[in-house]
Image (cartoon, rainbow, N blue to C red; front, side, top):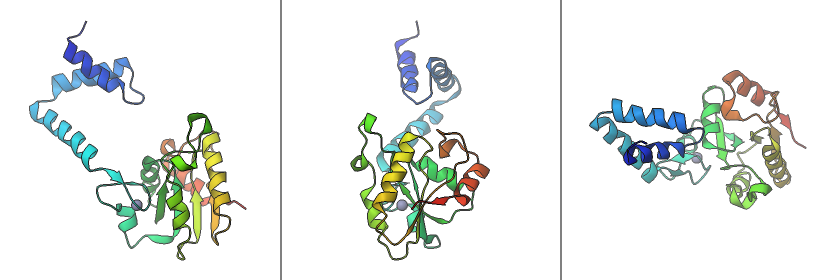
Amino acid sequence: MYPKSLENLIQSFQRLPGVGKKTAERYAYFLVNKFDKSDIERFIQNLELCKNTIKRCSVCGFLTEDDVCEYCKDTTRDKSIIVVVEEPKDVEAIERIEKYHGLYHVLGGAISPLNGVGPDELNMKSLFERAKEPSLKEVIIATSANVEGEATAIFISRALQKENIKVSRIAYGMPVGSKIEYSDESTILRAIEGRKEIK
Ligand SMILES: [Zn+2]
């Protein structure tokens, strides 16, 4: 049996997604054995700083330390196009291809009646407000290629029907169930370039 303090640390790591008992043990050992006092202090500081300063962008829902995120603030970005994604990490995945220069909208998940997630639980209303901007020409829906992602795409496209903009869905060309965050750069690029208009 481990000392209680080590056991507690292991349990903390086990709360992270995808981290089982063995990985949690490895992380805990590593911290205890390899991190000196200043490493630990910096680690705690970073955690606290993120927890205290990170919030959702009031425009798009991405993460920011200010009221508005770096993408929304950037006047060089193309305001005629918005890519709608489920999570902030999807934004970063698309940014890594360095080919997309429009804006984003982060829903914070996907519609999932089984889990009690409806449109009202998502960052949806502000998207419909943004869709009224005269500068906007196209909304590209880049939700996951699974049941929830598809349901979300259909809901958004219907809601935007009355707006005078093009609404398209990325073409995954990947197995059903694919998520943007796990796709490589060329796959994401092909998915965006091969997008189909939803009518
Ligand atoms: Zn933003």
